[in-house]
Amino acid sequence: MKSAVIVFPGSNCDRDVAVALERASGQRPAMVWHGDTELPEVDLVVLPGGFSFGDYLRSGALAGRSPIINEVVKRAHAGGPTLGICNGFQVLTETGLLPGVLMRNAGLKFVCRSVTLKVEHANSAFTNAYTNGDLIDIPVAHHDGNYFADAETLKSVEDNGQVAFRYQDNPNGSQNDIAGVYNESRSVLGLMPHPERAIGDELGSSDGIKMFDSLIANL
Image 1 (spheres, helix red, strand yellow):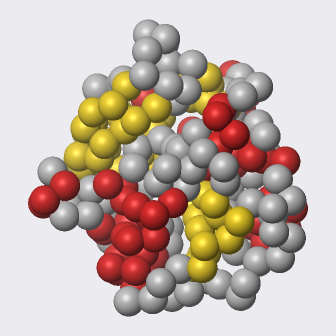
Image 2 (cartoon, rainbow, N blue to C red; image 1 turned 180 degrees about the vertical axis):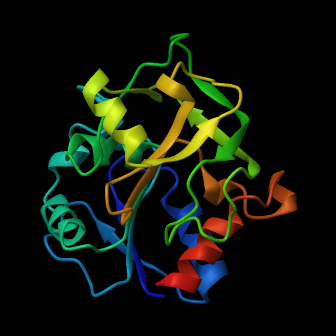
Image 3 (cartoon, rainbow, N blue to C red; image 1 turned 180 degrees about the horizontal axis):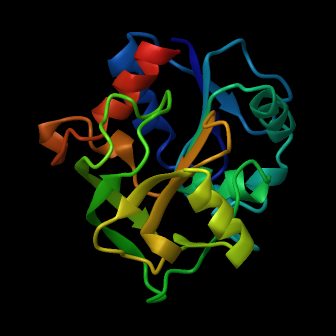
């Protein structure tokens, strides 16, 4: 599997996700600068976590208007698998590739700890190494992870089976305990928790490695 990680000013998990991808696939991902205008030929594009552009305006707003995003959006609309983690999830909502928005945490505090997630819908290239109903421990680290959508959008997300993961102990106030969502075709996934930080027992959990194993098996 060939992959690309988009790097923004303020990214701080780009190397973490690159390590996870290389460990799973045996191939080093291409690190693509946000100011570039072309993507290499890859099977997967990842928007990593961090604080792109210092979270000015709102989280993901400036990154969502970077030059490379035009190609990311075009590729995603053509069905190219795209993964957004934490800040990357925020960017995906800013571009309209995923429904809803990520607001300030309900407690107005930065949350950094391990959380338990329920795998809600595992039928995707990102998640089918899991089973529906699995409980997994994955760390979060965010200030703006409170998922919100208007009533009509939220109903559509639920009815279409677009919820990928739910918090079991909601750390941020997200509606319906939503921790991650797909687009309608499940070719795009955004989630606030960091699976790349849970790829070995030495990190406190190995529950995240199945996401990368799933991608290797399906792309």
